[in-house]
Image 1: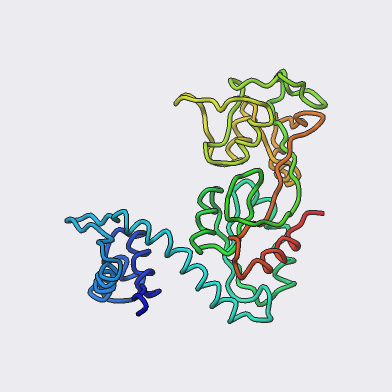
Image 2: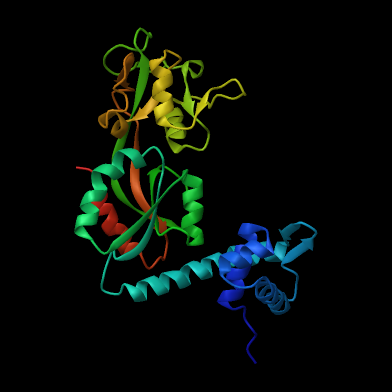
Length: 298
């Protein structure tokens, strides 16, 4: 006799409960009544033979069994959504809904130049863009919330495949009059951590640039950390320090401000590789590769 297995709906209920930490909000997201969602979760607990949530007043928390069920269930749900999308769009690549994540240090410089061509080539494509940091985009790929994401390598992400868009040189931006505001590549060893103003922790560009120089990330609450490249350039323009910029941002005119001098970092300039990434085994991998071709830099 075969074992009774959880249903997709029960797994979906638990996933929504984990996301919203509330039976009422999870039920609303699932478009069902709260009693129906509660009954589904209780049935899942009977099937698993263990509680999946701890119910205390005003607080919903997953048990260890519940957290593991969500982790495994996300993959099952993502693959099921892949199946539905693949069936709907069989023989029609890049049509229908496609959810694309993009890191903030790429989105404003790559997408405006490339997306008009993508729209023209695939008019049936409904592209939904989410801008976020790499770790959250990777989590979105694995949970099935995203179909693909534009990220920068190197970045360790097991279970993720990718297709190359192109290389992006990392450059230095210094205030006019600063000792580093000269011409030609910056000599090795001339950049110090105390001179730097950087993006906040979590931006891969920050990690790539510091690694290229062998500089330990500055620590402490006194370190200025910007949320965007636009803020960084304004700070450099004000003479407050030296920073790093991607070449694509420089080409887009981001550094065209008074008092900002952009220089190559070394003769062998550090680069990051821009790629389209997707969950290994996704039914939309062929479409992600097509999208990478369309976004590829000249």
